[in-house]
Image (cartoon, rainbow, N blue to C red):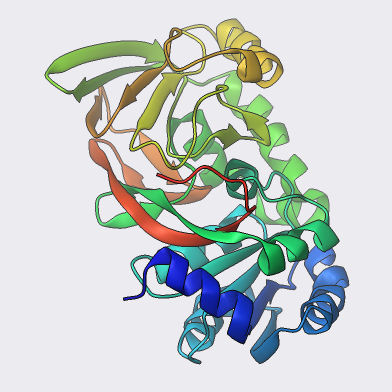
Amino acid sequence: MRTKQELGVAVRRERRAALVVNAHSRRGRRLYEGARSRLVAAGFTLLGTYPVERPDELEQHLAEAADLGVDLLVAGGGDGTIGTAARLLAHRDIALGLLPLGTTNNFARTVGIPLDLAAAVAVLTDGKVIDVDLGLVGNMRFTNHVGIGLSADVMRAAPPRLKRVSGRLAYPVTALALLAGHRPLRATIRAEGREHEFVTHQLYVANGGFHAGRPITADANADDRLLVAYPVGGPTRRELLRDTARNAATGHRRTLGDEPFLAVRQLWLETDRPARVEVDGELYGETPIRIGLDPNALRVMAPADSPDR
């Protein structure tokens, strides 16, 4: 496999690429043609272009694009699309190019990709190849986070019709409806010879630096060989709502050394009763679970001044 530097030279010189856009969303459908024309104008030879209208065909088209002999696979969509592409390209001699077309775009923010389409394409032409960590829950890789508790219950309970009508607003609406009867969990994390216990309605374990479009802390990122575990609030519903607002407002001013953050390389997590688990917004299973890291698993086109370990 080529070095990162060799792959970066090939991307800039040969410009062999494929484009896969999740066109199921209105924004993806609207921006697909603009993304394609901007890439062609930038000198890329697109060996394949895939505006994917059916979500269940996304993985298939990403796999087809990766098998075309490209140096760069450009994925346009939200965190779900990017996460699927990341799992497919892990440890492959292909760079992932990001076009953030979703709502929160957590992984793109973590890697420093501009949210403006023209600026994101400019990163593909003028940037460099870096490698970043992916999380591992069981044998499944993830880009952003694992959620235990209320977030997973919401994923399961959100009515399909409400999701179709209101999009992402379906999740906070469902969360408020569930919260009245939601019971807190007693979660135990074992990591690096120590045991940590939290009583909370919601626990996250993050690989990247952003959640819900906001920084988790000022120093969390996807290239530090660390997972960040943290509860959102304590046993009361009031604490959950308070800490949700606090995290969104103050994440950029906090560090991994602050409470309640726990920065480790891997962990074992169990709860006082089986609790549902979601991985990057998709239902995964139930606790107990082991969560770890796949270091430097994914090659990504990032801005030229991006740090790289």
